[in-house]
Amino acid sequence: MKKRVGVLALQGDFEAHEKALVRAGAEAVQVRTASELESVDGLVIPGGESTTMLKLLNLMDLKEPLRRFIGEKPVFGTCAGAILLANEVCNPAQESFGAVDLTVERNAYGRQIDSRVAHITPEAEFRERAGGDDLEAVFIRAPIIRRAGPGVKVLAEYHGNPVLVEQGKYLIATFHPELTMDSRVHKLFLSKL
Amino acid sequence: MILDNEQFRLKVGLAEMLKGGVIMDVVNAEQAVIAERAGACAVMALERVPSDIRKEGGVARMSPVSIIREIMASVSIPVMAKARIGHFSEARILEALGVDYIDESEVLTPADEEHHILKKDFSVPFVCGARNLGEALRRIAEGAAMIRTKGEAGSGNIVEAVRHIRTIVKEMRHLTILGKEELVHEAKILGAPLDLVEWVAEHGKLPVPNFSAGGIATPADAALVLNLGAEAVFVGSGIFKSSDPEARAKAIVKATTYYKDPQKLLEASEELGMAMPGLDISKLPEGELMQTRGW
Image (tube, rainbow over all chains, first blue to last red; front, side, top):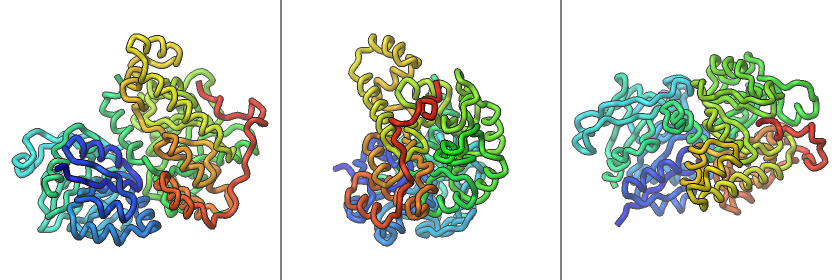
């Protein structure tokens, strides 16, 4: 049976994630309410504006249901999603769910003009589990992981900073695998479900 | 083709991140902070909001650089700024300043009555207005990485935004049922490049995100255009010309996410003060329309 994965659809590139999950072999559903959240086996928090997502989580009383979900089930965060899952956020400091032992600096590469597509060679562990080719990493006003705790496994780096990491049931990417046709990162997430 | 270009994909990528969000017009840093606090996914810096431009007349230009700089320093969300149609020097200044997106906008007084900016020459992404599919595809061919339907800015009247999104959606749907040999003729009628016409015929959508602007004044207005196919909204005068900017901004943000949920739309519509005053566009003289600017 196909795994049923939610994509938090408050704001951001949730449609791109839905398509990527379908390409990776899952059933994808948009999640905007606590009851929709209860119906899924795992969740993707997409790219977008983390401040906007936080506002809506507060405004719609979704923060506690999401905190409980994160405590129980696998979650994959890209870009804004990475910021929301980290335990420390700077530039500026803002609240987050603290699920993954990371310090993340927002907009750390600069503005849109500093956004880029990079070709990176992932760590051996990722290559063994997901396949060997380089990853095309799309960074858009991306955050940088400034510190990864001892329990965090780094799966890929770019210019010496971790860009794809995992900690238990959580997967974090500061880039956007959903904007390429390469399904390996999404498949890796599905393997956690 | 432009769609395969790596830099173009990055520009479209930022537009993807703004989907489901509200981009709010602001004229200073104080308004930008209110917009961010209310949940805007980006702000648009401009000299005057469209309803004031309409009232005061004169030439509307790019915002003063000092104000854009203050806005950029005061918020962490993306900052867009408007340049006049065809005014590539204003656009170069905005690019050098480091804004995240440029709106080549009919709301400002056009600088060129035949040509738009050749946007693919820039590293900063552009959004442009369109009233129909041909106009949208011409702008994409020039390098626009996001389209917004024009509506009638500063009117507080949603009728033109509805007309434009319906027109574009209908024209795209029409392309999907045509035979391949018919698309050449269709490209000629639309005044748009054949490769982009073929792309739309195959996918049934624009190759870049399609947002809506011009006349959105209430949460219900935002929900309406999203249900008609827009992927995000720009709100101009609708917020800071209402009696309760921050509450209204929050309500429109909520309505944009929950546009299919009547109960949540009801909640978003409660306890709001007066919307901005509206204009009957059919009574406006032709020369005062902003939507007819752009070629």
